[in-house]
Length: 380
Image (cartoon, rainbow, N blue to C red; front, side):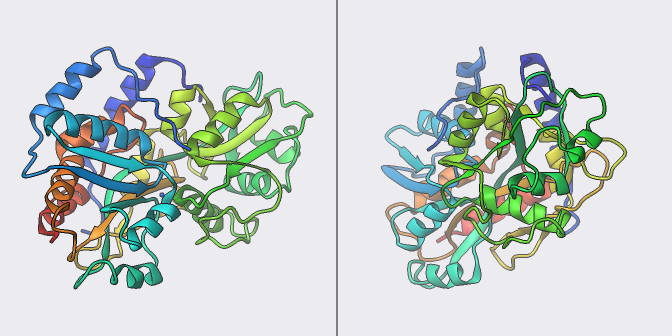
């Protein structure tokens, strides 16, 4: 899938928005500062800003975490600051692990993470959230694209087993029989595969690991809960943008990052053979189909989701993530609470979610977005 035509991207984005708005869940995770270009960008920002309720927001709000949502966060921050004079939202995209650490040390008002808090992290958060705990609030979804650079091959198809073996250094040549079988007629070179992975702790890494452990259990024996890259071999780069830049610059390379980074860097992406009737491309619309099958596993104010990485549903792209904003349900700092609530109210609003599709993300399915909208005002 070559990401080169603006019209194609816009059509895909609009389709994703329509699909995601109609989806209902069965129950109820070094950064690229490039913003999605749009000739009418200023008009869109002004329109969005005019509908934002500042609700007492003031001063500076510090946050950190997932680089997966960095491009979305850039759009949200731009619009919110345009509407709310004197407010500064400072989001550091240092990776999910780093964001959770800063949150549990009381250094930031909220953290972005591509995976839900672990039990021990929830327990740690209770020291900061006086009388409460950290909760997971889904905010943005999207596909983890497998990007590659291989001259003469524009429509590469891989399956979970082959992806696992490539990233585990068990398939090292582009013309390996397993790749050739999935790509009949493709002119695959007899050259070495350069596989890139994240050097930092990352929810993107963790979600890819969960997918491989589920869909290719016989070929991926590593800990699916690890946010650090668990396999031997390959080359490391910092952040999603670092991996994307490495793939863009190196012939014969392959790596993983959110679709927005593939879009921004014009990187070809792999279609996944899931066992459905046709390989599934990485797109916002196809990610929404997979996220629609998620189920809420959290309780109370916590909306942690369980994703089906082994889906074979037609058109459902299986390598997906949902980025959570992690905040205290109770015990937030009084001086930042109004700004925290106003900002999160905006990001989960219809206006906030609408900007996601054009940036290569999947807006939240309608029912989950509605649940988050009921919880954010209760933060205290």
